Image (cartoon, rainbow, N blue to C red; front, side, top):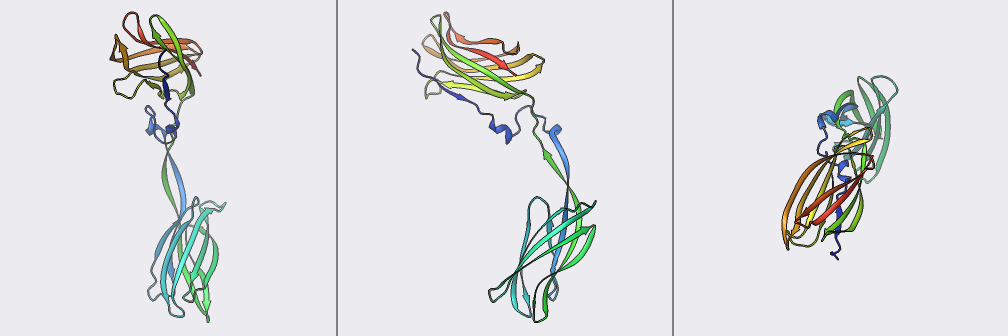
Length: 272
């Protein structure tokens, strides 16, 4: 009886992260217009107000932090968070701002401001007032359009292979394993096994690529590579072939050496 064979089936989860071989990335690129609002923030208590830039998008908040000297109170810290959203008016964006002002005595003042911005405008955002001395931000806002390239990996229809592997020896065959391999049109999936820890131990990799689907027919590119037994020794084995079969038809793929043949036989059924 042959030793138990550990079967390692290649997962197809990487398709969601990397571009699989054969996918035309250029054809999959899409350009999307991204509206946003660019703002410049100035604290009017400064002798020479500094313009601090920030870009507000809809998908995530943008943050700005800075400290400045306020003559009426001392050194203060400002935290500003904002985002822009569609306003229902062509060319306009709704800007939502939330500010926190940290005072030297430990107090934390919070304030919010909402403004409709169309084209370009300047507005004031007062955060706090001490003895009639206001701490105010002057905000220059402008609606801008940027372009973003979105790479969308496109795949063909799904294909499922039912693979049963047999050990062939002395004219007999013994079923070792049956597995289902899931892939997509023009994407390769692999079935592998190895019968020991050494590099020259018996091992085979069956690679299946459904090249194209035409009605009830499928064209499959088959590659088998690895090491096979050969009269008490191990030999390198490699073979390519193309199959054109009907849906659900069982095909036999041989990977044997010698006479009588010794090695492995795969029975393959394509479902799509």
